[in-house]
Length: 236
Ligand SMILES: Cc1ncc(CN)c(N)n1
Image (cartoon, rainbow, N blue to C red; front, side):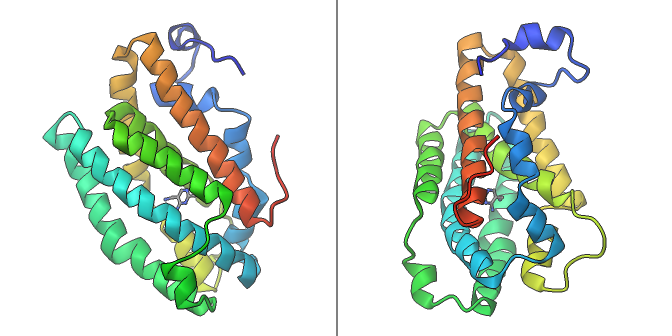
């Protein structure tokens, strides 16, 4: 879809935030991600163990490149105030939260040590890592923000759709908890706020480059869930 220029779009937008422009210009794929059948199955707690294991083995590789990207955000942010939330989240991801979760969840799902230390990458995992590496090595703060924002905002999107009582199985329940709740919402709010702060002041060409990274990340999130669901695409 040819993007509607930001200045034209915001003239009639109810919420003229730059991050909202990025999201709306990434439809229908955005909605396909946050309503993906695999994500819905996580929220119900009924993903078969073999599928959850394949997904988490691949996601552990995603998290490695994602952690490096957070480091690039610390390095490229334009103020001390902006560096601090990245540093805090980086510490949480690298130590307490996702790392211990992955080890416990993959052990419970019967993953072998080789699958965790030298796993084979699915094509979408390699492509996602390549996009994160491209953003990281650019050291271009808005491009880094675009990729981080998609990863976190889209995960908040599906996790906040969970209804009813949380799944009993900790593998599902903790994965939802890691992507929901007040702290995670504040983190997503921060990422969106940074894009909203910087985007309007960018030249149109730079805005379109940020949108290109945002859209590529959204498409990869969709392919990632398709891979997890066994390869059957839920593309719109
Ligand atoms: C593929 C993917 N995208 C996003 C997230 C959320 N951190 C994740 N863990 N994995």
